[in-house]
Image (cartoon, rainbow over all chains, first blue to last red):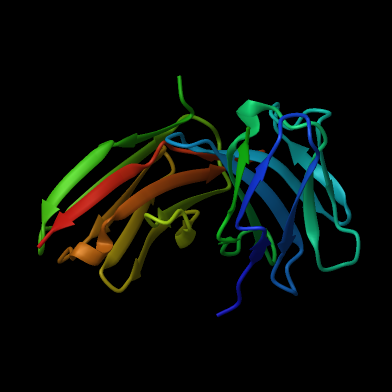
Length: 113
Length: 106
């Protein structure tokens, strides 16, 4: 069974620090996503990425956030200056083509202190 | 108003019971996903629907595009089905329901 892998599984960071969350999507997938879930709340869309550029982003995905696919395999989410309210589980997901099954990673739990 | 509404919010059932979880949405969609989130947090896709009905094992998902409504059914429920079930719709971006927390007691 193919899988999306995420690292780290858990990171604690000081407020104001930069954080990079890493994802390795399934190798032949073309569409990549980041979602977040604040503890006790519903999953929220952050950004989608296709053909090496952002295709959609939510109002949550402000200038503090950026995504990259630096080497054709990793897909990273960077938070430049973390805030307490960035504490959440961040999920990466990928799809081969639109209309196909979406595969989620296990999540990266970010705690900002 | 949430664009994706799920009911019930919480559901407790006895092993063997037939379970129904409902999802209503208010936006135009290209597809609807039913997801399962385990206690550890991992999310697994159960179904992706754009019309009609799909079945996988004891799970059945239906969608009525005209009524903007979908249901997830679990037949012969089992304690291992205990999880949060999330309805998500794909329009411009994916929008998620708040989830239904299912507990199946032996």
